[in-house]
Image 1 (spheres, rainbow, N blue to C red):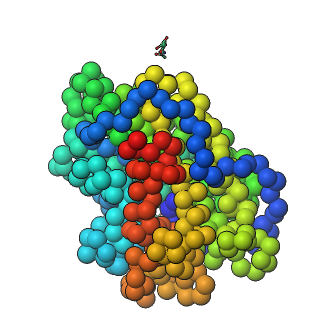
Image 2 (spheres, rainbow, N blue to C red):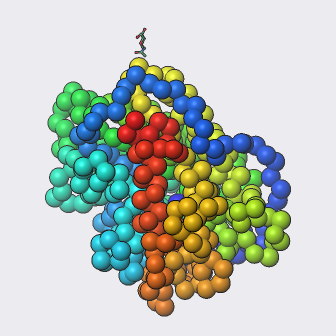
Image 3 (cartoon, rainbow, N blue to C red):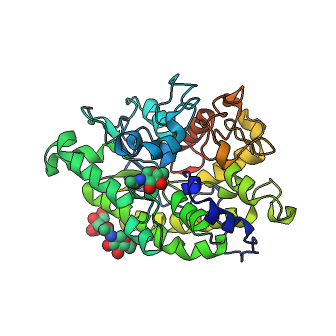
Length: 394
Ligand SMILES: *[C@@H]1O[C@H](CO)[C@@H](O)[C@H](O)[C@H]1NC(C)=O
Ligand SMILES: *[C@@H]1O[C@H](CO)[C@@H](O)[C@H](O)[C@H]1NC(C)=O
Ligand SMILES: *[C@@H]1O[C@H](CO)[C@@H](O)[C@H](O)[C@H]1NC(C)=O
């Protein structure tokens, strides 16, 4: 997920606040960690050549800071301000976290270097490169512009654009098309999570209800599935495809939409029911698509569906099992209250430059993105399971 244009679009945001959360018809039962993905004949290699990753601010490792020449925007995108980066890098590293993001942990576990952002100049990309960028969406900006969305934050690199960046880099990574096929076969791909921002646009910018936003789910999931097909056509064999987080458990949504509507809108764990239902619906449909793709390419491809929803929901329900407390409270920010989230006092803004005392005991870093500690848990689940079907290291 990524921060919306909440910065500038506060009137629209306000409009969305007053929208009654409606009772959403139960459309999906996804979200569990049970496994149904067909096992394939392609076994995990002991060592991967490289790792190629795609996505949004969850896995941003620096692209936005190279890509955006808009100083106002970079100032609004506070990942360049302290205390971002304080835990691992000791300074802001253009990551939306106090330390490493999920792709960093996975790369390190596989004996690979931290992945350079694809827009970095003069870097060696042969052991991996990260295309993820803040604002990344599954649908392209032409599509959003046709819906009246103008905010440039959604125009930095949609899924198709990121695949094009990757294609442009291929000759420098592995040479000819033929030698690249062999190289790709022994590389790990992480495709997303995509979708978080596509729903942010619908919910926060356009002010749709979660139920209305569901109308876009087939398109969004279809774009992700098409993207996976494109990677397979390039020679990708090992591809992790994550679903989205339980949106209704994030401090940003809870603080914006959770109060004043009555407790009936919250589930037993304390998350917004209607928003989680949207996330579950997306994940259920995505998982079906991943399974269909796995069947279609069963000879050659090993697709891994990552159940981020199930894992993060477990962290919210039983935080102590992971060494966490206060799962609904942002560690960094000056919002105060139950969620410690306020759009005008977000992490990194003036007055919000000191994080909570123990980020390693927290799930949410800035109310939108997880802490390094939570990212480490997520990476562990991707590598060894559960919540990744099959796990990367199986
Ligand atoms: C620069 O960023 C700001 C904040 O996101 C935005 O309002 C503005 O339109 C951007 N300017 C350009 C030229 O894209
Ligand atoms: C953008 O997405 C739309 C809808 O998915 C598609 O029809 C169109 O060709 C895409 N445009 C570009 C420039 O990629
Ligand atoms: C998959 O393998 C089977 C037998 O091993 C073969 O008959 C089939 O043509 C293959 N399919 C593809 C798409 O390569």
